[in-house]
Length: 447
Image (cartoon, rainbow, N blue to C red; front, side, top):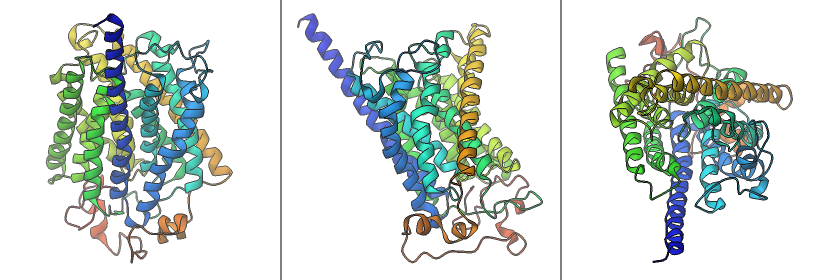
C-alpha cells in the first residue's frame, strides 16, 4: 500500500473516530435534560428541557456564526480570534488530519455542554426569552474566549504551558462560575430560604430521571475525553477512557460514603453529583495522570461537591442541581490536580511547582472572565428585559406559563412548603447545613 493511501486511511480512521465522539458529546445534552428535569419540580420540568434544547439549537448556530472564529481564529494578542467565522476563510493554521467540519462538530458539542451547565443552576425562575439571549452570548463569546486562551493557536495560556486536555477549565470551570454569577443576580427561588437562613425543601420530582441523566452524561464522557485526542490511532485513548471511568467511580463512591458518614444516610443526589464532579475534575488531566492518580482526583472531587453544596446554600446561592459545586468546584480542582498528579511535570512526580503555578493562573483567569462577563450580562438583562418570572408564575409553574403546556397531564400547582407548618420539609430538621437528602420523604431530593 502506498504512503499516500496509508495517510488517507489514517485520516479516515481519525475522521470516523472524531465524528463518533462528537455524537457522544452531543448526546450528553440528553443527559443534561434528564438530570436537570429530574432534580426540579414537575411543574417546571418542560421548561428546563426547553432550555437545554435551546443550547443545542440557538447555541449551535451561534457557535457556527461567531464562536468557532473567536475560539480558533487568528489574532495578534492571544485574546480572541478574528477569522474563521461561519467556518469560512483561511483555517489552515489549525493543523489537523481530519476535515475542519468534523473538528467543528466536535467543538460545537463542547460549547453546548458549557451552556447547559448554567441552565440547571437558573432553573425554576429564569425567563425563557432572556435565557435565549444568554445562550447566544455563551456560545459566541463567553466560552470561545476562554477556549481561545487555552486551546487557540495564539492563546496566551496555551503558550505558558497550561494543560487542560478536554476542558476542566475551558468547559467546566467556565460553566460553573458563570452559573454562580447568574444565580447571584437572579436570586433564590421563592420559598427556598427563610429569614433565619434555614432551608426549605423544594422537592425533586423524579430522581430516577436524574439517575438516567447521570448515566447518559457518564456515557457521553467517553466521547468527551478520549475524543479530544482527535485520533482513533492514538493508543493513549485507552488510558484516557480508563482514567475517566475510574475518576467517575471514585467520585460517586466518595459522595455516597461521605454522606453516609456525615449525615447517617447515603444521599442519592450527592452520589450522582459526586460521580459528575469526578468526571469534571479528571477532564483536564485524563491523558496525563496514572490511573491511581485519577482515583484520588475523582475521590477528592466527590467529597468537595458535598461540602460545596452546603457552602453555596449558606451563601443563599440557590442552585437546584448543584451545577456550581460539580462544575465550578470540581473543574477548578481538576485543573489544579494536573499540577500535582501529572506524570510529567507534576509536583508529586518531582516536577516542582512550575506547572501547578501555571495551572492556578489559568483556571483563575478563565474563571474570573466567566464570572465577570456573565454577571455583567445578567445584570444588563435584569435592568432591561428582566430575568426572572413573577412569584405567581413560580407558583403556577413555568411549563404552563412559558410554554402553554405541562410535562404531565393533570398536573396542578402545589403550595410552597412552609417550615413552620411543615417542619419535616426543612433540611434543617435533619441537618443544619441542609445538604442532606430527605430520604424519608417520597419524591424529595437535594435541590
